[in-house]
Length: 623
Image (tube, rainbow, N blue to C red; front, side, top):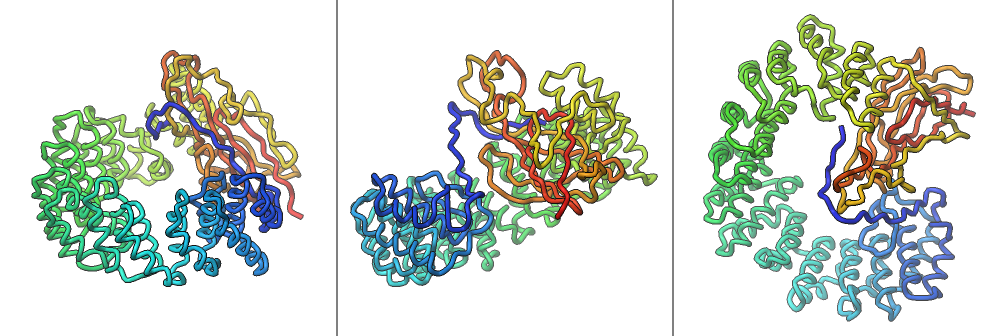
């Protein structure tokens, strides 16, 4: 299935991605630490010097994330490197010079670099404190960031940060509060400032996030704020409670919080009511009081409030059982076009769980007006296969489930126990089963259905269907050979970089970023031409165009006797939002980077693309 998951916008900005994989721990972008230190000191201009400062901070970083800088640095490295003490020492010494540079750009970048290094750079604290009053653009902000990242080692900065809480603009007040929180200063120093800022429509969200990070110490002040005369302060106090609970930072006083939120659901301001309902669902406490209140809002005249009430009930999971019959009744006669509301209702039913009595009620419902809801409820119903079969006969579109349910439905297709025979037979005859499930099941019984569906498919979808057919036993018309010395001779026209613009409409005024599903079929062999043993696929990038690195094992269907495999993945896809698109499908796609490992073989990294033909992969023998 193709899915557009981001709003349309007008321009796709593609930044260059600097990969440091080929560098050792003490180099970056082909330059050594000494090279970067030289550029920080002697660079031709302030930008070059600033980039050098951030490169040094990146090399000496203490965590995976390197945010807050201006240069194009990767932020997706799995772990920071372990450097020798003398390397850290000369990097920090160079950054000390950068912090004293009169040019604000260099000074600011040096502070950012120090923030990435953290407590190991504590010797820079005396240089950071004077920067709190600098007139250089953004220099005080980055100095506060760096001081906060030092943690308790920066306690000497507390008096200076307290002054900023009193004398500065609201943005600086939030930055100072953040630094104080990270330094572990007494929360009473900055909580009043943050509570006051909840009434500021420019800083309410930032202040709320800081209070949310703080956790339990913020609760008494938030409870008082929920009774304040200012609407915005009440609303953001409830929002903060929701974050506290969602981030598992609300560890006590839950009953008192729930009582206050229930009172807030009666507020005259509907925005406050919405946030109170959201918070009740996040706190997930005292269900005997919370659930009846949430049920009462299911028929609220404001759709967003009704949606949130439905969503919040599901957060209680099994404790939401008292609401189950009411939720089922909501699906019985859908009386609006608000599919979002009904999806929330169905999702909550799923999370609460079904017994046979409630499953039987759902199996009798007609979902033609709200077909997406049926896909959410199919898998829970399959615990009762006879009821699931009755449900599918009335709602055949329910089988077009989302990817998170693929594995569960595949297990049902493979379940040969007598209670599942009728359900399995129906599924094998369905013409709406997701292609990925057919492919991973690799059953030739699906071939007639696939061929029938291909008759009305567009050219792009036909490539996916052809891959599905190959997985089920259809012959291939092309084989791409891949090995350690041959990366393969296939790239679709849409592959980035160098995407062919043929799928872009001349009237294109925007695009949607999302992903597209890819089915890869083929064989995995050793150098002797025999199938490899126990192969594993590890996805090493996510599905975004400039995706983060990772190493995550992904499902693989593999036949040890023949070496045949089926792999379902997804890749980045940009879709044309214009009219009269010359060709169907995404106009720009990324790739799925996979490391293949097998017993007795060296790992091999392979790049899989959209519209991938059959492949034959040869893994090199282990030494």
